[in-house]
Amino acid sequence: MRELAGAAGGAIDSYALLLASVPEPVRSSFREQLLGPLEDYDAGRNSDLVRTLEVFLACSGSWSRTAARLHVHVNTLRYRIRRIEELTGRDLGTLEDRVDFFLALRAVRPARTS
Image 1 (cartoon, rainbow, N blue to C red):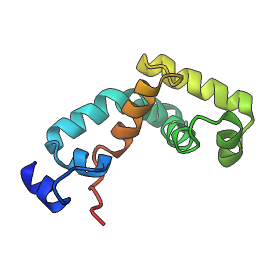
Image 2: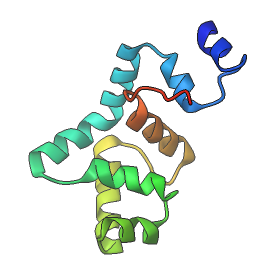
Image 3: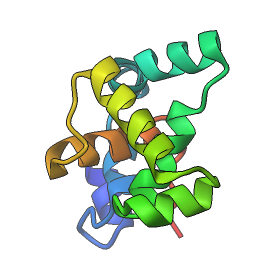
């Protein structure tokens, strides 16, 4: 962690550097705990809940922008978000759960330092 802080000018100033400091098995476990149920559901039903979650977070939780980017009706989006919440026991209306999902989606991607 000190090496990362030194490389970052004495501070870890991004989530990517923070995640990079967490051992890979811990990142993988975190991701699996949060996204595993969605990935299993998507695989078994050929659905798109993980992508829906990614776009929803990228659109800062905007229903209309997310629906437009996914090319679905807002009611379809509401169904998908409700399904995500049911499968994970999380509430996408809370900042804490949104942050957890955001980090889980990036937990196994290598950190970009530039």
